[in-house]
Image (cartoon, rainbow, N blue to C red; front, top):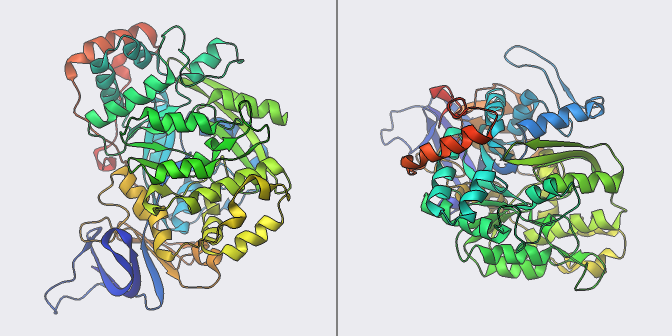
Length: 543
């Protein structure tokens, strides 16, 4: 039994905002304090003066699967100056960089105080590889969202208005591929782009040939199916027209397409741009108008996809976007098509503070954090590694908690930025409790994780202890102690243990009588046989 003594506890899910108290841990869970005074802990951690929070929950990252490995192969130069983690007793070697190796990913997340991570875009056919890599990524519990927005069988079912088959297919593929939620990436748009030879971009109400279904229908019906299946996390949406001037109207219509159902809009910064046809030609922020909708819509949640200045790697299940970015930058790129399911694009990218477009992306991300009134509706993300590495989270926290620091960075951006965003007018500063919401309690609630993101009895004993400091960035970069499942995994940035994580997945109750129809279609169209598709996991990994 482990006791954390007299720390300042920030546990928003249980209404604790700096309360000085003890935490007790037994058998990997948070437990109530023993009623018998004779019970003594086997170890006590003196947390006086320390900030105590649940382990971090990253609900949108890219750390496993075919596209991540494509990025590793495409960018050997990324590893030339990457931090090297040297093998020693109990730990394996690894490389960091914008796309870390599996071991380095687990170690770095743990050292930062994060204990649960979701890969946000895994093609069902790539799920076996993704889960093999999860098993190779220590220290974190992990799950994945499965790509469905350009799935041929799903679009056929929706075109025939066969909602029962669509719902059964979603339930089946989540079960067979050990997924956690349905993911829509540029729904319908990737298929149109592939068919057009790389020239077309899809509007929300334009039919997708040859199916005749529109992206709006895909969003509406998958959201309805997720609700009918009782999934803990609703449909996870990467909207159409990512990165395009004027795309805020598509984002607004996507919100409306949910028709009041729960929905999560991801890396929302990339979908909040004004400009283009129909309004002023210059690229600008339309965050305020979209944030007003979120503030008035309790069914909506977002994560930000914050851009940070520096070099990174763009990887996305949005093949058209990958192609567009590569043409824009002139850099190398890689496109990977997944039969019947979608495609992805990978390319190096560098965000420059002196670039007006890049500075605008940086500012729009911060606007989202500051303009959404309820922090429970917004989660921290960089869309790792697309906007920047997850290792930049402490820098984002600094920007949110220190308005003067924001102003200092803003002064180094192009002056025109002030006319195209409202960031300079925002004085809001996050509290420690609000940081605990957007990095822990909020993502856990959005995901329906009842044992994560809080420190009440029964929660997984995932705990992070920070030295309270005026140096905010340093404080969150280097936790005093990180505990995963009751095991101390890091102290002052040094790894102490590297336990295996668990797989976070769903097992929805779907109509099994639809399986013969799905099997026949699968065997007719896929290169893999139906019976070989389901992913097997060791029972010990399932959570």
